[in-house]
Structure formats: structure tokens, C-alpha cells
Amino acid sequence: MYWKSFIEKMELRSWVLKFLKDARERGIKIVMITNLESSIQYKKLIHLGIDSFVDFLVTSEEAGVEKPDPKIFQIALDKIGMKPDDVVMIGDDESDDGVGSTNSGISFILCG
Image 1 (tube, rainbow, N blue to C red):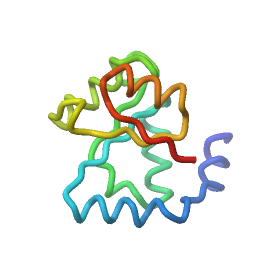
Image 2: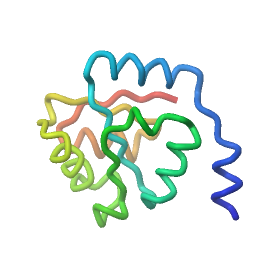
Image 3: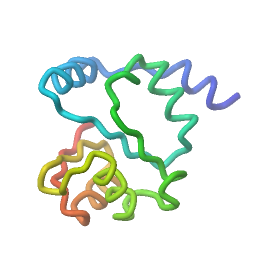
Image 4: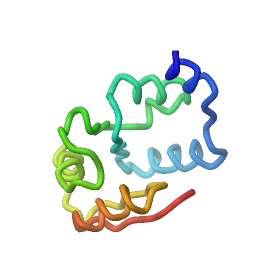
């Protein structure tokens, strides 16, 4: 019941859809890294209407660790076949997203 109510009330920030569309047009791959179960995250993506813009989803459920553990970032890199210097992490949490990506050699942009 909690997740159903939470997801129903979720709203996409105004800039996100434009960013995702621009990234898609430029051929930029989008990988979502999250500390939650896959099933919940897929429901969120579908509810927000952005599931078609996310190329890969890496969850702590899949990785067996949570951000900021470098293993979850390495799984994301492996899925897209890229090196840390070739990607950027955009996240809203400096400790989980920022520390994890930086410790993995990935540049980080904090957005709020």
C-alpha cells in the first residue's frame, strides 16, 4: 500500500523529460543506478512515463550492494560497455551518488 500511494503521488521535475529527450536524440545512453528493488523502480519509471528513455537499470537488489559501493557502478559500466572516463553520473545525493561515482572514477554532477 505504501509504494502504491507513493508512486501515484510522484511527479516528474519539469526539466527531466527535456533532458532525457535531448540525450536520446544525441545517442547518449541512460543507466539508472538505485538502492531499491527492481520491481518498484520499474513501476516508478512507467508511472513517470520515462521508461523508454532508460536503457539499463542497475539496482542494489541485482548488485548485492548499495551505493556508494563501487560494485554497483561497475555493473552499470559493464552493461553499457564504457569506461569511467566516458560517462558522467548525475545524482541528487552527494554521499551515495557523488562518493560512489567519484570512488569509481566517474565524474559527478549534483542536481537537486
